[in-house]
Length: 148
Image (cartoon, rainbow, N blue to C red; front, side):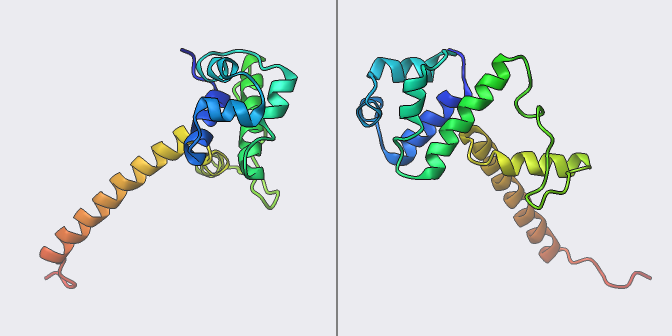
């Protein structure tokens, strides 16, 4: 099974809405086997199916995430890295110049990707535990203010 951006986003959106593949197929008025094929394989989506899948969700954001996932897959099929194919800019238009600024902007833009969100959540949990442990250590072994 090849994981595509659109396949991951469809699964994510179905989980968010509590939909099965059959229920999504009914909402989008496309056959359930087509939904299954889109999720499980790297298949080109027919324009009518893409139109249905980008207009069947309850929020514009969800519809947009599906469309963006499809575009990322197409950029990848064209032989480009979908993460680095465009100039990264902050919302105010300034260019992200440093590596850390570019990384933060990439993370910000892709938080809606379920894989990215899960990774960030696991990292945040790990960092929170480290901060808690560090605080516990500093409370039990305070650093002296003045050293002789």
